[in-house]
Structure formats: C-alpha cells, structure tokens
Amino acid sequence: MKKIMIVEDDKTIAEELLFLLNNSDYEGIILKDFENSKKEILDNDPDLILLDINIPYLNGELLLKEIRKESNIPVIMVTSKESEADEVISYSYGADDYITKPYNPTILLLKINALLKRCENNKSMITYKDIVFDIGKGIVKRNDKEIILTKNEIIIFNLLLSNKDRIVTKDELMTDLWNNDEYINENALTVNISRLRSKLSDLGYEDIIETRKGIGYRIV
Image (tube, rainbow, N blue to C red; front, top):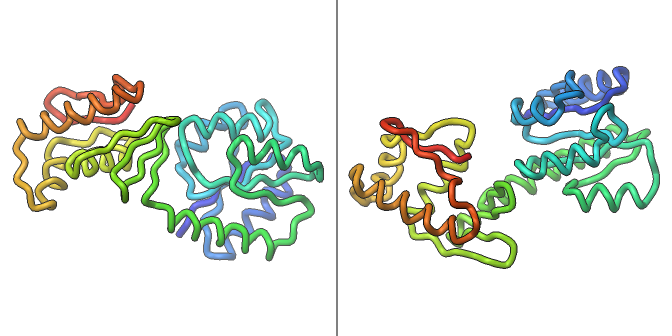
C-alpha cells in the first residue's frame, strides 16, 4: 500500500483528504509538526506528498525547495490560490503536479495514480542531493559532468543509495556482488569502494561514502 503524506494545516481539509486516501487503497498520514515539517516528512519516507502552499513556518514552496535538496519524493501542490505565478514557482522548486482548491476528489486521485505510475517507470533513476544516478546506463551525473561506473560500482552505489538511512554491511554488499556471478572477497570490495569514492570525488563529493569500521558503509 502506497503511503501518502498530507501537509495541510486546515484540520477539516486534512481529515477529508485522509478519509479519501484511506478509502482509495492508500495509507494517508497527516503531518502534525509543522515547525519540523521537513524532518517529519523524510522520517516517514512517504511515496508521495500532498503539499499545501499556505502552511505555518516554511510555506509550501520553500518546504518543497528544502525537501528537494535531499529527496525526489513525488509532490503534488494543493492550494487555494489560482495564480499562474504560484504554479510556475511550484514547478520551479520541484513540484511534480499541481491542483487547486476546491479540488475534485476524482481528479486528485487520478493525478496521484498517474504520478505514482510515472515514478514506478522511472525507478532506473535515483537522485541524491544534486547527483543523478542512471542505473540503466551506469552513469552518475552532476550538473554537466558525468562519470561512467563499472558493473560492480553500479551494484555498490545502488545498494548504498537504496539504504541511505542505515549502514550497509560488508556482507550485504558482497552478497549482492556474488549474485552478479563474480566472486568478491573483502579486499576486492575495499578496492571497488575506493574506485567508486574516487569517481564521486571527481564530481565534487569526496566524503559521500562513510566507512563504519568493522561494520560496513553508508551514504552521508
């Protein structure tokens, strides 16, 4: 079941959205802590965010800008404003779609479904900070610069990025590499990590892979 975070300070509207989502085979979650909204959103790791523009502390557009520094979670902006400027600003900050209040529930659900399907089809692309990792092509890009990764580097980087909230053990990494029909011992893993670090350093990220001695590695 897909998890959808509702970022809406009007309690009546938030409850209506929660009811709509929970009765449409989604798991709805209402944001409670607007003062620490970014942290609560990222901690919940939703599949999609319904984000109102007019919320306390950071407005929705600035919150979206902050979220996009760390995550490419799909976002639909929900607003009572009908200004084209708001729509342009929302898209420029990284919104994936836009709907205006009072919204048609059917249209909203169609937008949610379409966006989630589109994201499923784009799973070969992972964004972290301002790095874009094209798994299918084995390329890591930052701005106009791109680096080609080897088969083993692709496997390692994909596993680390897919588990960026925790330490990935050496055993997990070596198991994924063994499944690629290539025997990898701990020394070979260290060499592959070193080469991957060097390539990421060329993109300006010298310390993106942190070593946890005796345990494994994690993305920072």
